Image 1 (cartoon, one colour):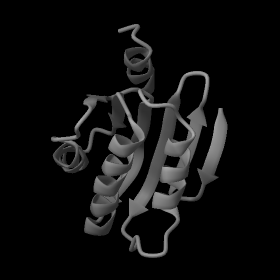
Image 2 (tube, one colour; image 1 turned 90 degrees about the vertical axis):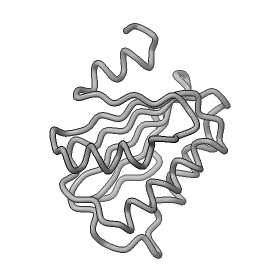
Image 3 (cartoon, rainbow, N blue to C red; image 1 turned 60 degrees about the vertical axis):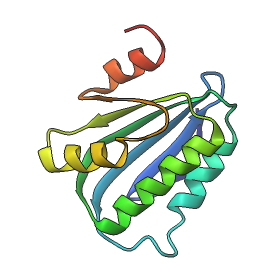
Image 4 (tube, rainbow, N blue to C red; image 1 turned 60 degrees about the horizontal axis):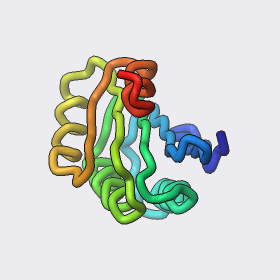
Length: 130
């Protein structure tokens, strides 16, 4: 696993042999996106992978997502599509509001997307072991 970026709000890494992008987001995402390196870090990671890659996002540690971060999530969706993602798993907390926000963003993702409540199930699905 190769770590691309690690901040107090996110970690982005890639597993080149698995051809997978990993993201963990945490805390309260309420600050503005302008000037934040998140999108650049995300794009850098996606460019390291081959077309047909998979993605696993762990959002179990996020408490609040502002409108600015919702817009950033929509931009990450576009980065994933342009980089050639085949499918993605999103692990969410039990927060109903957060689930609704994330599901709305990825409703028309343009790739296969599935939501999970634990990382092991998400990883197994991406590995085709479900």
